[in-house]
Length: 384
Image 1 (cartoon, helix red, strand yellow):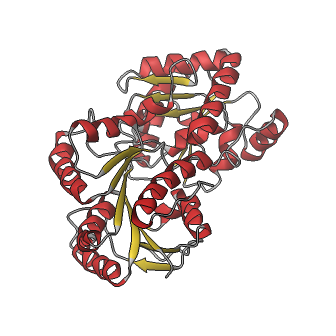
Image 2 (cartoon, rainbow, N blue to C red):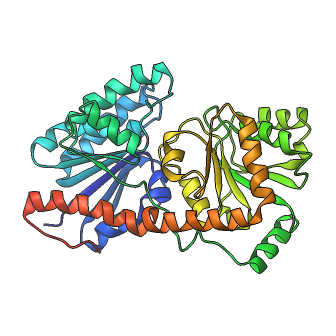
Image 3 (cartoon, rainbow, N blue to C red):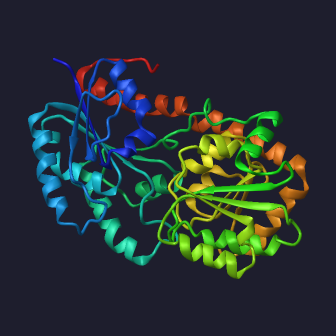
C-alpha cells in the first residue's frame, strides 16, 4: 500500500511559492501527495488536490464548512503524515485530524511566524496565543522558522510532542544570484534606469505592517545628498495610494517607483544596489533572503525575522522602526562607500548559501520526516 501525505494551508498558492521542493522530495520517495487548500491552481508533484474554502479570518463562517470538508478528506484517506501551514490552515487541520492522529497519523505544523511576538499588539496575544498553545497538544512536530518563536514555544511549554527550528522555506540560490556589470547595465537600460542611479528595492504588500511610509520618509531626508536615489516598491495593497500621496507631499514622488504586482522580481532584484525593508513584524522574510542571495546588502527595521537574517555591519543593518534618521544615514553610507556594497553583499550571499538555500532546508525538513517515519515503520531513509 502506497504511503500518503497531506499538506494543508489556507490557499494553494502557498505551496507554489514555498513548498514545491518538499512535495518533490516526497514524490521521489514513492509517496502519494495530496493538497487541501482554497483555490484551483494546478501544482506539480501532486496526486490529488482538494479545494477547501478555508478563509484567512477566524471569524468567517465559511470556515465551518471548510472544517467539515477537511475532516471528511482526512477520514477517508489513510494518511501517514499530515503537514499544515498558515494560521487558519493549521487550526482547522489539527482539529480535523484529532481522531486520525489517535490512530497513528503524525501531524506537523509549521508556524510561519507567530502572530504574537515581542512588540505585537495585545489583541494578538489575547486571540492567537491561547489558540496556538492549545492546539500544540494536537501536534506531533511544531516547526518554527526563527529562533524567537522557537524559544517562546519552549519557554511557554507548548505541549507539542516535538518542537523544532527549521531555517524558513529556503531560497533558490541558482535563480536568485548576483550578475556581472554588463548584465546589470543591460537590465537597467531595459527598465529605464541609468548606470549611476542608486536603486533600493522592497517587495511587499502595501499594508500597515509593511510600513512603506517609513522608507518614503527616510528617502525625503536624503533627496538632496543623494539626488540619484530611486526607491523601487513592488506590490499592491490598500495603503498604496496613501504612500503615493505622502511621496508627493514630501517632494520625492519622482524618486519612488510604484511597480505594482511583479512576477519578474528575479530579474529586477540583481540590478539594484541595496535592499531595504520597513515591516514591523516578520517571521523569516523570503524577500530579504532573495536580496541576500543576489548579493545585496540590506537595511531593514528591527524585528525577529530581520534580526535573524541580518548581522549588523556584516551583511547590512537593522534599524529602529521609529528612526528614519538612522535609516537615511545607512543608505547614504552605502551610496557613498561602494566597497561596502560589495563586501556586505558578498557576506549576505555566503550566509544564504550556507544556511538558507532550498537544498539546505529540504535536508533539514526531510530529517524530521525521516525520524517520524522510522518511528512509525522502522524504515531508515538517507536524506538526498
